[in-house]
Structures are given as structure tokens and as C-alpha cells.
Length: 138
Length: 345
Image 1 (cartoon, rainbow over the protein chains, first blue to last red):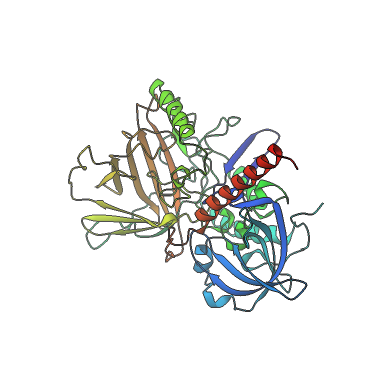
Image 2 (image 1 turned 90 degrees about the vertical axis):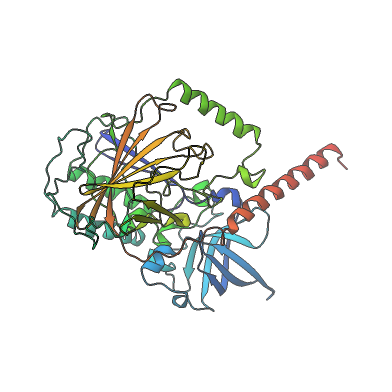
């Protein structure tokens, strides 16, 4: 789940529990809702840091020109508890990254979805029916 | 149900299976009785070499239970079946994809990183709210002074300019200073809700995962800091009352307001190990300058996995730079557009 209000209820109007989900900062202030992207990149570095991890990719355009991109992901703390290390994710791994670009138009973005070449989402979300929905879909 | 959904819910089912081993009782106990409604039997915590009840280890205060009772709920406890249904639905919703093009979608996926609540250690709590007193499970009304101060704070914020005009205008969490998990009081947030407790004869140490705060609390009976010394997390002093660790905190600052509290808030926290895997965390807030009466809440903490990876927040806080850079870029774009309109070619 991303930023949202989680609403859970049982019965016909019996009760309603509203749990606000608050992350470290407002991502919509950092990234532009009007700049969705879908990139294919090769991992060059993973910064396993807090408050949010950052993935570095080489992204090739149609002309073969390579651009460096930085993609923001989640805090790595839970992954580390489950045995994930820097070595779990190999440099050179190819991924499809869906996300939104930084408001200052630099090559940075938030990784809405990080999907491996075999169609599995990175880390704990299991496989995927992607491309199900992607930013910019009409 | 998608596979994503199944991942989260399967973790939930494991948790519920263990909950079901606990006897159902105590659901009609009065508020403030110090129970989550699970009717767990009396438990005596093991002792440290110093003879203190042993609270040491890793604990999670992750919960789906809201601080205040929902307005359309009138009872103090859910039945086990109702709670199971609530948690199932909340977990399924956590695993859903957000809608492209919405503000909620401009975010990484919590589930990919194991950060959803349904992927965390969570204690059973049949209560309909964390607040146990007042008996309606809701915050007391603000006092006249509390209302005035709330209005003053809104005006002061407005006077400082927009939320991204200066780094000082950004929320304390975005600046890696304090979040809800730090408190005090310590309340669970969206993720990274793990705490480590360590004890010596004269001190207790509580490491807060989020933002990497460490509370070091003397137990030797020394007085609080002088009244003119004010700190983000106040001045805390602890003592043992039987099985329970009691921590009293004063000397807070008006730079940080817990739900609108004043710097003179007095907080009393109580930690009791009620089962090998459960710690009962209770707190009482006394702040007549904010609320018309004192109020209390209770949160069960569940044993969690350690160690905690250091949440070195400042060092990796690229987001703060990006947010401010984004705001400046938007201002520049707006200025250029305004200039174009002013002198069209």
C-alpha cells in the first residue's frame, strides 16, 4: 500500500475504523504527479539507507544513450530483519521501474513499482500481473 | 484476490491462529482496567540479575486500533470475530494497488519492502480504541486555553510562509527530529515500529527504531531537570512499582506538540510484561492547559525480531533536498509563466 487512508469496516454501518497512514514525508511534494514514467534500467548501485533506500540505474534510450537515474524506495529495516543484504540484489539486475519524476525535472523518481525481468516484483510482493495499471494509463 | 493480497493476508492468518489460543474473556471489564480484552492469565515476568522484572528485548507497537473510538462504535471491545474481519479487510486493502494519477499513487509500495502493518508483529487488541479513559474512548474537549493556543499555532505557521519556503517549515518528521513513534508517548506509526529495551540497575534504555532516538531514563530517584531546561522529549525519570516500570516525563518544549499539548504536559508511562510475548504499555496525559481533563491510553506491544538496523535519518535524507528543490523549480516555472503572460510576443 502507498499513502492512503486505510478504511476497514464490518457489518452494515456497525463501525468504521479509519487509520491514517503517515510516512516519513509527503512524496507528492517531492515528485510530480504529472510526470509518470516507465523505464527499463540496469541496477548500478543500491543505497540501503534510511529514511528511504535509493536505487541507481543506467537507463538506455532508443538511440543507445545511457542516462543515470536515482529511484527512491522504502526504508530497508524490515527487509534486513528478513535476511536481505546488499548482496541479495546483484548489481547488473535489470528492472522495469514505474514511478513519478522529481519536481525539479532531474533524473530522480519514486519507484511506484520495481519489477524484475521475470515479472516478479522486487522483494516481498510476490509475482505480478503487471502491466496491470501504470502511471499515465488512460 | 491477487497474489499481492494473498501475501499480506497469509501473514495475518498465521497471527490470528496464535491469537485463537488465548481465552476470550474480560470483554465487559470497565475502561482503564488494564486489559486488551483477551483475558490472558496473570503472569510474572522473569527477573534480571538485579531483581527487576525483565522487559528486555525487541517489541513492536504496530496496531490497526485507532487512538480514538470511531464515532459509530459504542462498545469498548470487539468480539474476536469482528476484530478478525477488521484486520483481514485492512490487510487486504494494504496489499491493493493504488490508482495511477492519484496523490496516493505517488509513493513507493510499502508491501514491496515489508513495511505494511499486516507484514509486522502485532499484538491482539480487542479494544475499539487505544484511549481507555475517558470511557467513551475519545480525547476530552480542548480547554479554552488549549483552543486559543491551537489557533495561535495555526496563525504562527501561516506567518512563517508556505510549507516548503524554508527547511524550518517542513514537518519535524521530514527533518528527522521527531515522529509519532518517538513520542513521548510512543505510539505506533505506519512502519518501523520496533523498540529495544535494555535495563541496568540504575537505568533503562529504550531504542526507538524510527529516527533512531534513544531514551535513557535514570531509575535512581534523582529529580527532574530544572524547569528552565526544555528538551524535545522532555526529562524522564523512572521507578519500579511491583511488576511495572513507571516513567514520568516533564520539561517538554512548545516546539513539539503531542496532539496539541502544551510544554507543561505531564506524562506517566507504565510498562508491564503481561505474557512472555506481550508487554502492556499504558500512558496518562495530564495537561490542563490543553484538555479539560486527564486522559489515558493503552497499547499492547508484541515481541519482535531484532536487531534494529540503525535509522540514520539525517545522513540519507535526500528527500528533504528534493522537496525543497522541487518547490524552487515550481516557483521558477510559475514566475516564467507569469512573465510570459505579462509580455506576450
